[in-house]
Image (tube, rainbow, N blue to C red):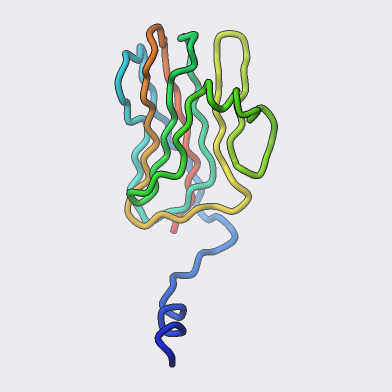
Length: 142
């Protein structure tokens, strides 16, 4: 077997379906300026979707970060998601929803993302007045 084929044969298999789904939630209230780790999951597992809701703050300078196995997958502020027009379903996997004083950023792709070691959903608050941050992550088993 050639070197290229042997490395391909050693790749892990990622299933199309998601087994044993569960929700993990994180809450920070109030949320002062700084970085807050809202959900941290140990692997292996499968990331299905997440949402972060922000109540308060008017500048939109609150950043949602999703890291999988030490690699950054999402890093976007609420303001940037709005400026980019991410207000409807799209293939990039980010949607910003606004409802009165609560803004929600939803994250998810058509195919689940596998993580081996750790998944971290964190929020960096860079604006005053955040009353609360609420995050939910849906994960599947390995």
